[in-house]
Length: 355
Ligand code: ATP
Ligand code: MG
Ligand code: MG
Image (cartoon, rainbow, N blue to C red):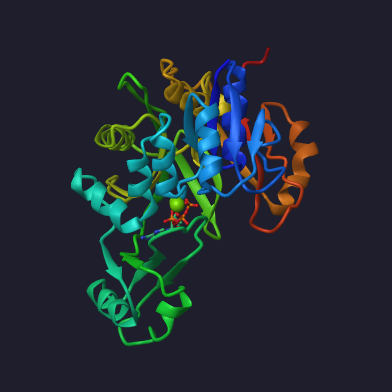
């Protein structure tokens, strides 16, 4: 079969590779770290930096299409690839989602509400931004943050205490967001096919601990109109970007049921892992279908479910979990269980048929 190239070798790349193999594709992974989760299941790994020109040329030459599994692929690398081979989702989706300021401006520009925000480029800017937000907010690095890294929460900080914060955050461009007291958090996994058709999965309700996703529950405990609004907003993002592939969009649900978009990831998403256990076509297969030009699959689920991440030493629970009925376990092949490291996940299906 033809080869699909993946930039990035983490667990998302691994699960994409597994889905692609099932549809008869070969997989080549570009990843500097040897024995990475994706390389363990791919046909081939190119061991090089993501922006290595020779490696990019090689990946382009052996791939029918190139995709990626993380949003911080250097845009120049994506464009270098795109000059030689189709790159999906389009590199523009990387540009928008790599910078929280650009991302929020894009969302607001297509009438999707977000938390209020202000760019912050120094301690003085932080002081005036906090004044504007009544002393509370979430300060984030504009680029490169994940799992809540590069964030700092301020409460009732109207009278100083900002000195040195900009430097402590790495002297990089920052954004201050209003501190949202949300009722819950949800996310939508959506896909747009090469033919322009859009499909979205039901929203998952997400619980985070220490900035890291712990669990995703489907269905989310939200009103049908809220679920529809979240799915419609996701579809609007896909259309506006001329997107092809799977996207994950996170939302805050306020107590009146209204939504604020938090962030989007131009790739398969941790909060969509439940789809491998509860849907005929998982988010991983959906992404492969989209970038390979196949029709999208149905997104309806056969079961309600809860997905939980196995973080750090949680991975030791594997033997107990596989002993449970209606539980699907998925480990990522990482040798070292460090605190905060995502080692795997499991999905527990509810109300299964007896036989
Ligand atoms: P991810 O691992 O999902 O990519 P991230 O590091 O990009 O995470 P965010 O999603 O922006 O970070 O924030 C992580 C979590 O922090 C959110 O899921 C939410 O629980 C909380 N949070 C973020 N922004 C705000 C905000 N403006 N108001 C209140 N809580 C927030
Ligand atoms: Mg993020
Ligand atoms: Mg997030």
